[in-house]
Length: 95
Image 1 (cartoon, rainbow, N blue to C red):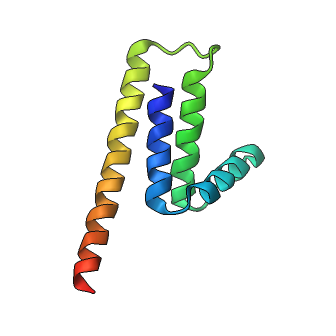
Image 2 (image 1 turned 60 degrees about the vertical axis):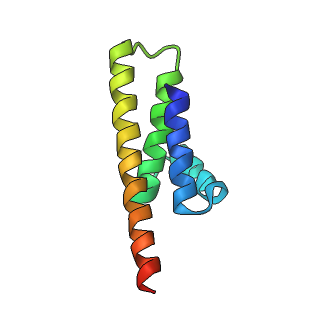
């Protein structure tokens, strides 16, 4: 499940633009524990932390909880990407 969340995070990074650049920003924000004012970075860093927490052997998550959280994340990311791609397609037609 952690891998599914990580792939969702990567999908968003590619949709937002430069995955390598965003990866550095996310790592820095998590490491310094700074408040992220950019909603995009907030979402991406949250996904990163969830993936990390799910894969931690010390975390005692039930299988149902992991499945529920992963499902919600995948649905949310899918909705964001769907919205982004539909907006881009409309803008491309208008231009």
